[in-house]
Length: 185
Image 1 (cartoon, rainbow, N blue to C red):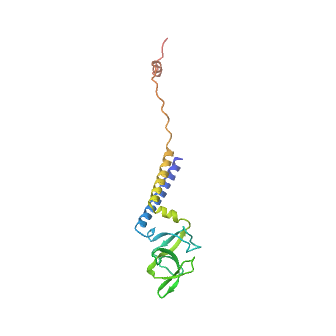
Image 2: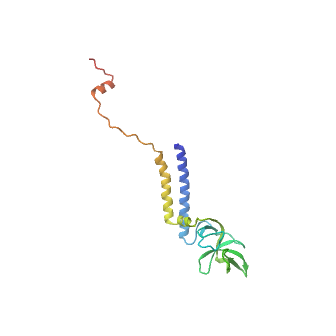
Image 3: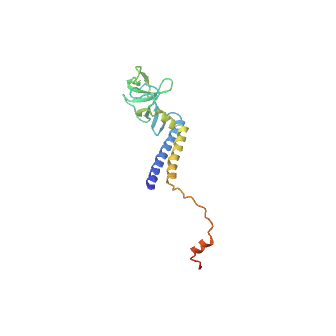
């Protein structure tokens, strides 16, 4: 039983360290400005229903920053107010891209420099947990939860100690019996 608990403890430690490392990397990348992510992959929390029905508010869209977009791809782009939005490339016109959100009727023209990356997939409803993991409270929570998951099984493995009973002084008769002396009367 102790061996099984030790194996589970080692697996939990590995998962905890990986989650803690990812959380710290996401925090560092988000702090440097822009989207949080690792390498060329970034997370974008959907804030509106412009790409409905595929993406809903609160979903986490995974964006590949190094991919080359083509017609039909959903892309993350900057709009006229410099905020980010998910749209779809529906064609080109005079060297510019025609972008249109799936859930809206209006389209707009944009240059390739306005594109941030290509949409690669999504995780339904994971937007807020992703934001939480990218912040200091998320790192602290992952750290504290990991410590508890690793330390608690160790306490469970400890055998309870037997209570020590106080020794009473032995009488001369008890000592003499232990030494092999028997009285002659």
